[in-house]
Image (cartoon, rainbow, N blue to C red; front, top):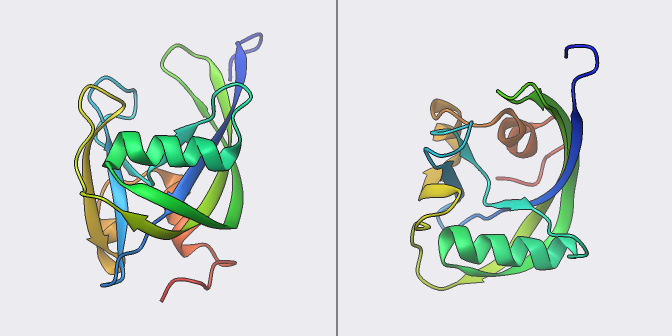
Length: 146
């Protein structure tokens, strides 16, 4: 990071949603984002004053069309990246299990994602995923996925 560069911090909540076949639900970043085409867990940044669970429920519905019941907190992750604007962004990611879901899966229109897909766990790493997804799903401390 260049000396004197602007620094920002972001808190976000994401959900690990697994269907009856053991597939993981992923969303793809829209072309308008600096991470366009990368796959990540449904979720996103919290609004000012919003609880992590309420934010995750909101983001899930926006990105996937599904209503969810948020389960236990799975992990807390922290990462930094330098944006194209040279801003250093530090993101604290709260990763929750999704206890249940209902509704019809659909892609977001005109938002931060442009596709959603159920992906077999053994194929997740074949996609261009965000690094935190690998850590959230396959990290050494995570033994909860089959």
